[in-house]
Length: 108
Image (cartoon, rainbow, N blue to C red; front, side, top):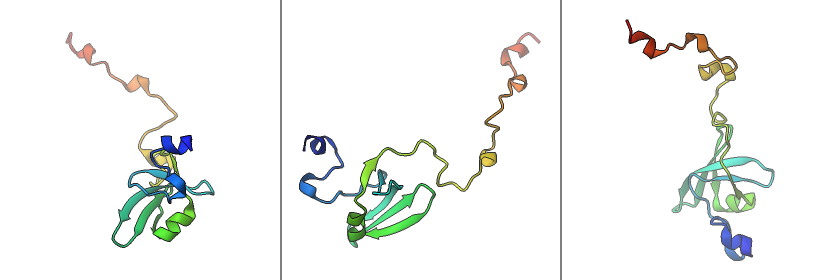
């Protein structure tokens, strides 16, 4: 009970966890997703999984997920359809020889 009181996302007395837009959650299988929309009028919740897949859930499906809050992933590229080569930089190679020192131009 003390842990539930400390957690801002946790529900008291087994009330369903309320989804918050921008927060990350994981289901019972450990699949992570972000809540991207909540429509209180029709009771729908939009989620986006790490791989970019979008899904719309109703409140019953949300409760069946038994989602728990988690930290956002550190790797920002999950939902982007990019390969390592597409990042636009060579992440494995440092190219110090191409760096120019702007102070070298002052004496000229």
